[in-house]
Image (cartoon, rainbow, N blue to C red; front, side, top):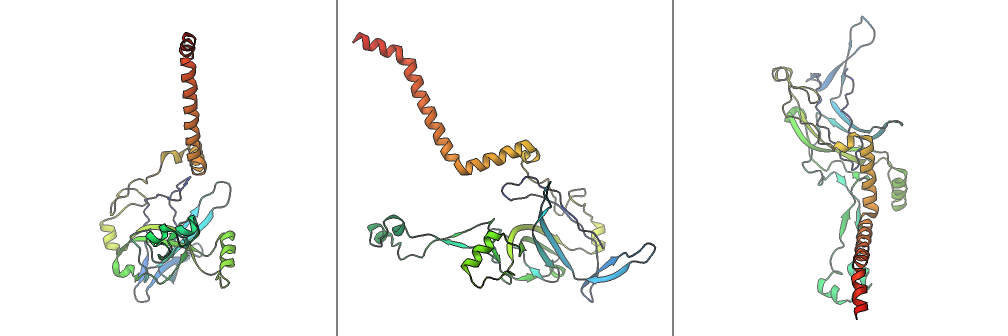
Length: 289
């Protein structure tokens, strides 16, 4: 039985969007009568390998690589090749991912705290439905099974799209919040902790040998051609990546305040410089009068 394969590591991802462009090639024997994969397991030296039938399930996992701590498991997607959810073309519109929605207050309540103002009568905001805003990741949304149609790789031969990676392990803060909101909170519900885009193809041995492809991004690189992943060059260096992270943090916290303060300081300094520069002329004009 083949060991699990890994991609390379995209270090220092600040916004959570990892880029890989990585190809895996798995060779396996398939028993069409029992619809199972034939796996060979070696027991001892100089002994014949044992055959065992396993379900044709592809497991793709996402891990957070840590240098000084144990790698952290993020989520996984399990695809039973005989029947699994179809991949979605748009990562922002997935029927099987339910985002929590936050209610926004009516403008009349927010501004004048009454339903009788002229603005509300003109816009009829008190009669409209309340606006709902989607709360995106990293707050883990709920995974809803059975919302998309299923497909079989043995029938389609090739599929492509986005699949949600799920886990039942939530941060303690979010679990406590959900328990307070819902007395019937189910801890076995799966939550989406990541989305992964894949292109999966299934070929018989004869076709695969006739037109082979290389693993990772090695030659022959085709079907499809995989370019190098689009990763910022600053992420490759320890010092610049820390500067990028720090600047991103301070920009979100107090970016506009720093810009306004800088402009005020420059404007004040310019006025002081002009006064000092023109001070002799001003004094001469005063004494002449």
